Image (cartoon, rainbow, N blue to C red; front, side):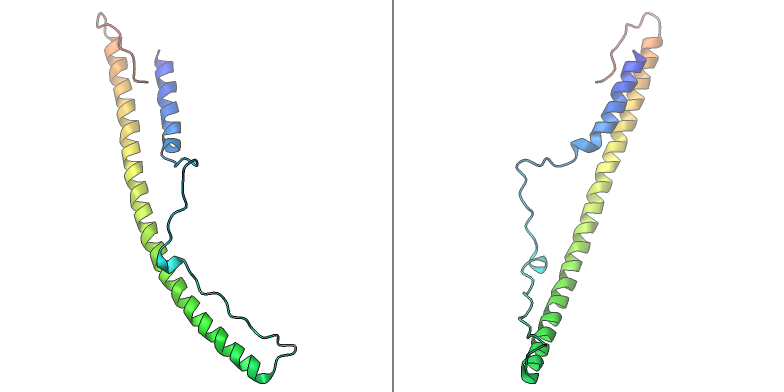
Length: 129
């Protein structure tokens, strides 16, 4: 009976993390923040093999403007990512704390049941599933 209990407790420990994972069916893509969506499209750059000097200068200005815009937007997106990562870390820690309590309490309860069942005349109690 003890072997069955500990096998069941071990199975609970193994499936607990899987139970916290989101299911694939019915999931929708998360909404991205404004900082992490709508990145500016790259400019149409001239072909250096045949473009005039003026076309290359206009291309350099277009590239510089695009580079500044995308660099700023990427920095804002990185800030959003960092904030969300901190939130995810806190959620994972809360889940891990609850899981540790669950595992520890389940093990302690199993020990109490085993101790109770070991007493003569007490009448056996089945361990939790």
